[in-house]
Image (cartoon, rainbow, N blue to C red; front, side, top):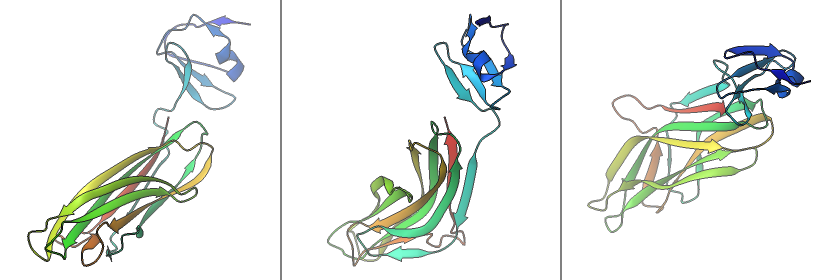
Amino acid sequence: MARAFSGLGVQTGLAADRTALTGLVAGQQFYETDTGLMYLYTGSSWQLFMPGNFNIVENSTTNYVSTQSTSYVSTGLSATISKTYSSSKILVIANCLIACWNGNANQDSYTSVRLIETNSSRTKDFFRVLRGYNSNNSIATGSRMPFQWIDTVSGTGSRTYRVDFACTEGAPDTSEFNFYTNGIARSDIFLQEVF
């Protein structure tokens, strides 16, 4: 049986009550007492709405890692989140302290970064994000750089995300993760389930 929506604000009831409502306008909210979920009407459909109830995970590392490999290697920075809703996405933000040492005066050197979801090996690549200039041997370029990815993975359950990096040109160039700078060498990863 269809029911008219009683106005703006939050209406409560069972999931079946929400689907039977009529006379809806954008911005109306409905809390399902049988499922514990909050929905927001967008003007054309109901969307899951979770104010103040976010699934967030953070992790950091101060470990130093260097490589001359052109293949990606792990930085040791990772985090695991439990995905609650099959329709949600995972926002991945990594804030990394990376450097690139130029060991060859005849070419530029580069560092590339990869975010990887280790359960399925899905990746988001950031190719040649940092450049070491070829003006002289042993010249370094370093920076704190943010990397972002919205992973549209389906299903629920535990998901682990890791930061890998590579020295794009290989030896004698070197890429560094958490290189020393004024005594602060820390990189962070942040995961959030979003809708």
